[in-house]
Picture 1 (cartoon, helix red, strand yellow):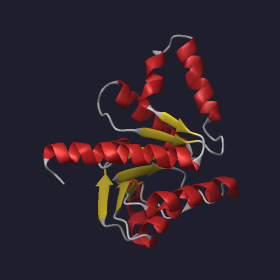
Picture 2: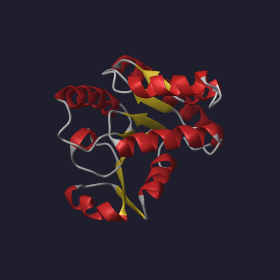
Picture 3: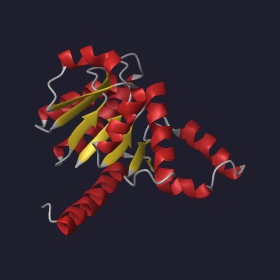
Picture 4: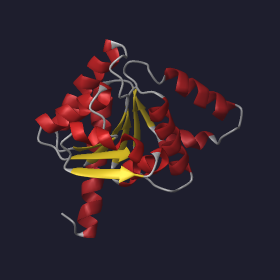
Length: 191
């Protein structure tokens, strides 16, 4: 299963985010999952890249032209260069089976809100998981709950993503999605 890991590329964030993400990503890439990511070898993105490579997983790096030099530090199985950040977000979605969000900055939040809106609008129907074991997404969830409560958005939008508050919940969701993907592949005769 191709998992888009959307996350921070900063090394200057709290160790708790780096360490928690590392523990989760070790679980994710010990299984038969491949990495789709924003093609940076630093921060949580770098951790995802190194763990995927250590576990002999396929790695698809996707970067906008402005960051094309980042590929020089990577050994991706597939490199996708996009015109801009918006196109990168679309490529992350199109090249993955699941979108998994870990702590990140403005780019990660942009990808998250874009993914939720695109799914709400019916542009894709892939699972979205927010890994919230550190409480990183609590404020965003509070803001979204306010948006739902004040009728700016239909509360059914909550159904377009899952918030997992511990690593085992993430792994359970990934197992469920993996089973669904295998069933769809069997129906299409792709197995």
